[in-house]
Length: 125
Image (cartoon, rainbow, N blue to C red; front, top):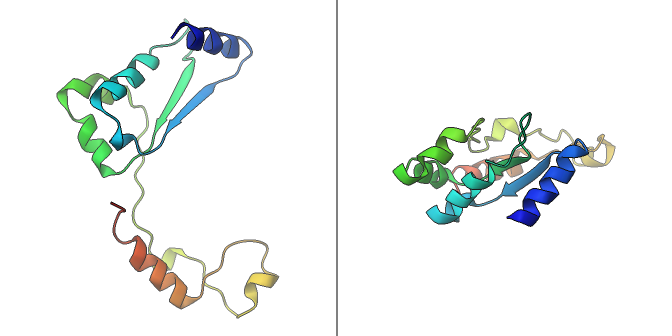
């Protein structure tokens, strides 16, 4: 922890913010999530030295409701939820060769959009 603290202090003195991204955070044990909370304590008198982004499935929200994780849950400043993709949210391709003429934005055929939407209707296991 000492090495990490020293690194964060050095980065902070240079005006940098360190970001830790934890994907599939719902898989973490309660003990590991508590360590994340402890890391969130690293700060100076004027700013946090570490930003932590927890990314996970809906089970993460359930886990954060556990009594032993209430302090971590209370520290979460922003929560964002993604809904399943809908076919109408996908830009549709107007012609078979539209992807060659496009400005680089994604384009889907109606059939592909419908299939993608059906596939995304359920959250992954």
